[in-house]
Image 1 (cartoon, rainbow, N blue to C red):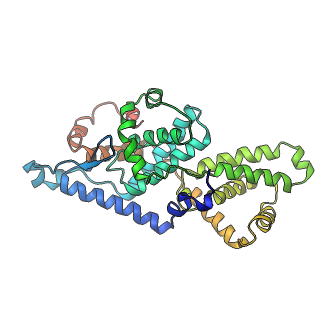
Image 2 (tube, rainbow, N blue to C red):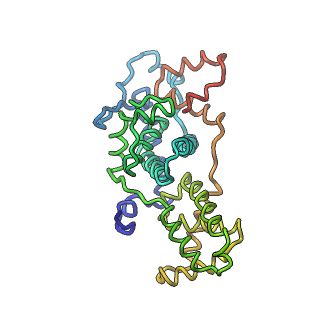
Image 3 (tube, rainbow, N blue to C red):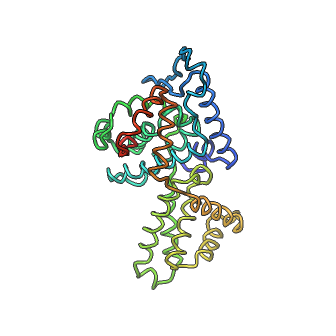
Length: 325
């Protein structure tokens, strides 16, 4: 694999916080404009990755009564829906016992995709499945679309229909760098740094497992779009060290920087790790109730006919959580 320093991951897919906000805002604005113009936000996608919005609606009554049109999602609602499906990506990968690298790759694909698109244009459930499938192929863990779809009781054709769209939206940049490999390097370095008693104990292994769980959490935040994998790994290791009080992390960081990155300032590095921690603290997993409400709005945007159908379903059973997955 190529070095991160010369990768497209570093050159094209690491952003500043304001850039992320603008991208989410622009995608949301475009979907709202489509809703006004076409009466729906759904995009028709061909197998070759080409796409188009639905034809402008000619229904005179619907055109006359704008209040009858579905309401567009707010950017905050889009964020909650993305967060829900990022959590689902981890669930699916765990269910299939995929390596963490596949899980991380799928999450990064999903995040990058929705820098280009609004969830109102492409339902995240479909894109989630396609990102997992694409990640399996990129990491050479061959799972057929049929096997993936069957395993989670979803139509595998949806995966195939969206595959080219996803790959094009990623700019064909399929090689990504997850923090787990960097974490392994830091754990090995920590082992050399600590005293003999600690090396003889199980603490290094405990630290490693704890830090991997912290990386899992990090991957659901915006941090992978803002920081390189090495800093994500170090932030996870620091949080693990704080829990287990195993080593003096600041002393280790100073030692590591002096040996491996002498040009890097210690204070700047700490600021980056603090910023990553702040993103983790803001991380939230939406409740099913919140997501079901947003998903109903989303379905109305994608398919206006469902707007009226949803009113007729109010007296039906509310146990429709299976539709979310």
